[in-house]
Length: 411
Image 1 (tube, helix red, strand yellow):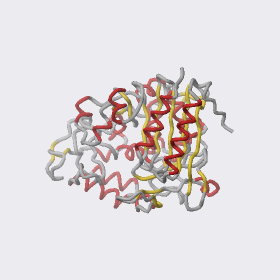
Image 2 (spheres, rainbow, N blue to C red):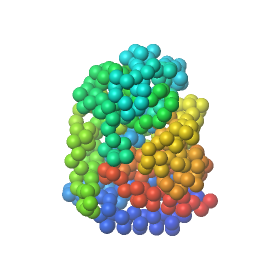
Image 3 (cartoon, rainbow, N blue to C red):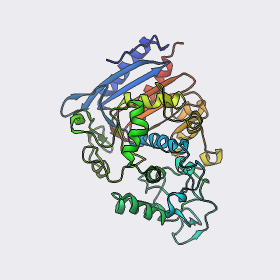
Image 4 (cartoon, helix red, strand yellow):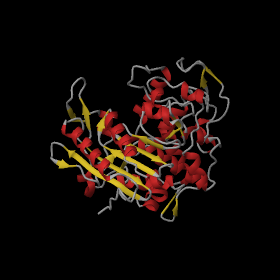
C-alpha cells in the first residue's frame, strides 16, 4: 500500500480533498470515464486517487495501478535513452547523425516549406542528435488533421512513408531520408518525426533491440516494472479502455480510430517500436522516471543520466523567434514555454499560467494524445501526474488538477 501524506509534503489535506470532489464531479457528469491523479512533493506522495471507470461497459473501476497508453509521453523516455549513449561517448549530442545513419547523407532542403519536392537547395549542415531531440532536424511531420496546418507535398510524402513502411524500420528510414527536409537543420521547430529516427539510431549504436535497450538503461534501474510496449497477458486486465468524444455531442464511446486500434498494446512486440509513442505505463512508474530527472539523473543510488545531461535535457533550446513562428493555436501553449530535449520547459510562468496552468520557471514535462499529462517543478520539488484515456483530451480537467495542486501548497 502506497503511503499518502499531504501534511509531510507541506500540502493541505483539506484542499486536496476538495480536488477529489471536483474530479469526482467531472466523472459523475460523464465528461470523463475515469482518471488517476498523483501529486508528489518533498519526497512524499501527497495525493493518489483513482476516479471512475477503467472500463465503463465492463464496470471495471479505475485503480492506482491501472495501465495507460501514454502516447507522446514516450518521447521523454526516448530522449533519456539516447542521452545515455551520449554519456557513454558512443555518439556526441552535436555530431552528424549520418555517421550512424548514412541514409541521410546528401539530403537536400526545400526552397520553400510548402513547395514542390523537386524544388530544393543544398543543406547548410548535417542533422545532429540535438536537432532530433529538439524537433529542429527539419524533417517534416505527418499530415495534420487540423485546419490551421493543411497538407503540403512534404507532409504528404512523410505520411506516405509511414503508411507504406510502418512495420519496417529500415525501409521507413530510407524513405524518410529520401524526402527533402522541410527546413534547414536547427532553424525551425516541427513536432513529430524525430523520435522515430532516434529509435533506429539507438538500435544501430547499441546493437540492442529498442524495447530491450529501454529496459536495460531505464526501466530496470528505476524499478519501472509496468512500463512496456506490449502488455503481458497477465496484466491486460489492468489496461484502461480508450474512449473518444463524438463530434458535437457529449457522448463518450470506445475509441475506434484505425491508428489507435492498430497500435493497441495487446499483441506481439511491434516490428518497429516507435520512440514518439507506444509505451504503456502507470502513474507510479512515471513517477520514478520523473523523480530521476528532478534529482538530476539519479534515483535510489542508481545514476541513469549524468547531471550535466539531465540539466541540458530540462533546459529550453528554442529561440524566441522559433517559438514565435509556431502556427496558432500551438503557439498559444508555447507562449510561456519552450522545448528541451524531448520535453516541454516553462520559461515564463505568468504566460504559462494564462494559457496552460500554474508552474514555476524551469518546470518540465509533457502530455499524450489520449489524456496523460505530467509536470515536474524543481522550485517546489513537486511532481504532478494525471492519466486518463480520452482522445482529444479535456484540457479543463487537466488544468483543474494542475492548478489545484499548486493551490494546496501550504509551506
